[in-house]
Image (cartoon, rainbow, N blue to C red; front, side):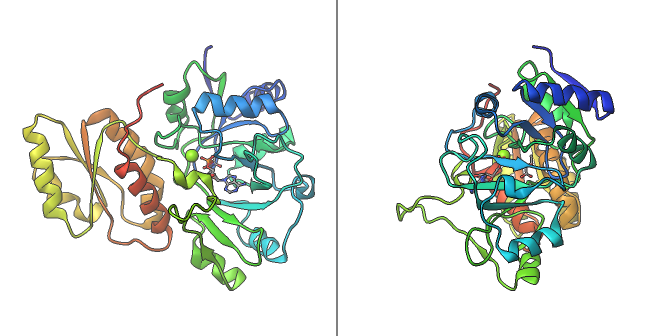
Length: 341
Ligand code: TXA
Ligand code: MG
């Protein structure tokens, strides 16, 4: 199969719609990362998404809708605080997990009685969702375990020959996946940190908890995605704390002596230390938003250019950086480096 990258236009959107209607999957841009979209009502389309990604079949998908889609078609209960969250943050990088009506394919939520719903703010995504006018399930458009994609070319790198079309809506500006927040209980509970932070949700709802799975208790994990290795570049990775620059330099020198090409991933403020020592630096930027935007692009660039990547944690770790650190840790601490499938 030939995979085409097409800029968003009336013609490419129409083609995407036709593909979706016949059960195909299509690469789509969003403001966070690119997604691999399919018709949420079509069992075969949903199964195809799991297949083409190599995604474990107990990790549920997010349904994406346009801003005027009638939520009551797909969700069963809508607590008043969820309405407040929608008014404050949507369209935008916040996914809400509601009790489901069970109308979408049972494969979407992998047997859970809830449904994760997201209204992306990306204009191209909105235009596409409005044209198809059905919920589109879309995981991040990367092979399972690999780094999430923030450009159409990233999607191409993982899925060339496997999907017919990637809609190109430019680089994703958000850079890390949406905050996933459970709204099935009395108050919001964050299942995956992202650009909409705990503090921002607290301001709107008065209270917000963060779910931390207890792997030892035998309890069923609320958001199965947290169990899996994720976001890993295809090179060796090491992670050092923000106050361990000497340790990072020491490790980099050792790896260099082993004839490995070594790169450093760090925030802008500390990069000269590494440049002076002659290492290739992958610069995350300065502000928390910049670091979120740049993280995946730099990980994907690094895997192409170096054998070993030493990441140094940025100093700021709260707010948006909670989400960035969550991804960075998973990327660097994964031991099984994914190979191209
Ligand atoms: O920004 C995003 O959310 C991107 C773009 C494409 O929209 N999508 C994305 O999808 O990151 P994915 O499939 O890579 O991650 C979905 C996360 C997983 O951690 C999954 O376990 C969780 O959402 N999730 C989905 N449905 C759920 C549900 N019903 N209950 C709890 N967690 C759910
Ligand atoms: Mg993902």
